[in-house]
Image 1 (cartoon, rainbow, N blue to C red):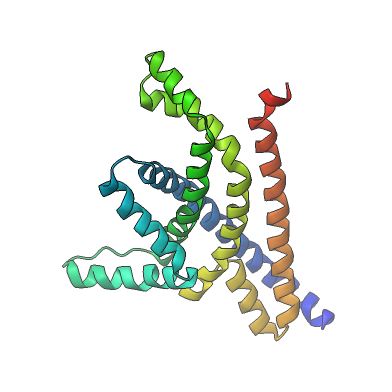
Image 2: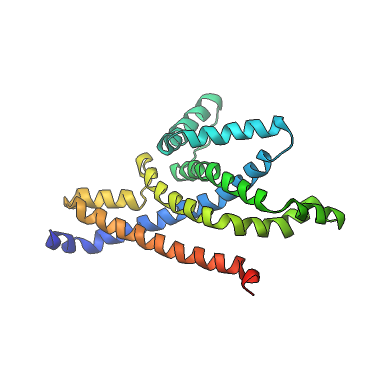
Length: 228
């Protein structure tokens, strides 16, 4: 088994590394876009207006209730099909882009709840003090409230990032050659299923361990004033 693995190691290991790059691209793009959507969702769910709050809560709950694979499949195949039906000149959207959109929505639906809790953890007196000082709500949120929000939200967001990283493996079901897909292709070509999937598992583990160290660094940075 090991002889077969090492004889094919160079070519297929390079494919796994390329797949790992695709996995990181999927994860980081989905994280960035998902965080923006999550902030919007969290703010809208805290709105005083029911006509805004209820529809957003419904969207978030529907996405959270559906299996992640179903959301990805719907986005990858349902959206292009709908565009073809309703548009004469439908744009050609790559499966990678649709996968990022699906992962972003999945991440945002969970992260919005973490951010909403983090916003509620910031004392209301912070808002009131900004209002007394004549600071606009937008500036108060960006300069004063948001830094405190990140401090409360980071542990939960860190866990959700790891879940997002693993969810990228589902994108292989719709044809994107990520780390999992590359591992499956190497396993099928060499008939060494356990060995190549184990290599993929170690790469996932390495990315996760590095991610945890980066998260600790962010946590130390955000709490530097508390430790001073």
